[in-house]
Length: 219
Image 1 (cartoon, helix red, strand yellow):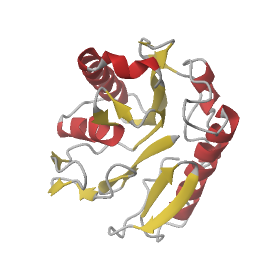
Image 2 (tube, helix red, strand yellow):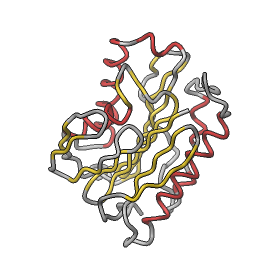
Image 3 (cartoon, helix red, strand yellow):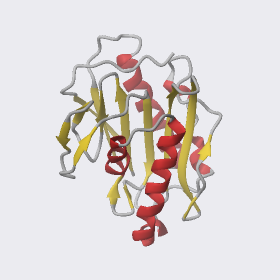
C-alpha cells in the first residue's frame, strides 16, 4: 500500500512520496526520482490525497498531479477536470495496470472564484475510470482535516489491495490521521515549519521540510 500526499502551502507546494522536493511559486526545480522540471503557477489553497496505486498509466501520482500546476485554472473544478483528463490519457497508454491497481484521488480546497470549499474525486470503479464527481463532504471542516470522509474509496471499487496486508478501514484511518497531523502542525500555529509527509506501506515518516512556510489559512 502506498499513499501520496500533495500539500499546498502559502508560497509553495510540497510533494511527498515519489518526490521529496519543495517547490516555490515561479521557481523551476527538478523533482528527485522523476528528474522532471516543474513551474508552479497556482495560488489556490489545495490539498490532494491519493490512495491505491502509486503509479497511474506509468506515471507516479505526484508527477501526474504536480505537472499540471504549470497551467493556470480559475477554479478548483478546472484543475479537477484537467487532472481527470490527464488520468484518462495516461490510462489509455497503460490500461493493463488497472487490472489489479485501482486508485482514488481526492482534491479539495477553497475555490476563490465561487468563494466556497469544494471536493472532487477522480477514481476507478471496477477497473474503469469513473466520471469526475464533486462530493458534499468538505476536506477542510472548521480546521479539522480529520473530519474528511475518505470512506468514499469503497464506492470507487477499492478493496484491500493486492500485495498489501492493510485492510481498507486501516488505510483510511492512516490517511485521516496523517492529514490531521500535518494540518495540526501548521494550524492554528502559523509559525510551524513546513513538513514533508512520507507514507509508505502504512508507515508514517516525518521529514523536516526545506521550506519554512505556513499552511494556508482555509477557514
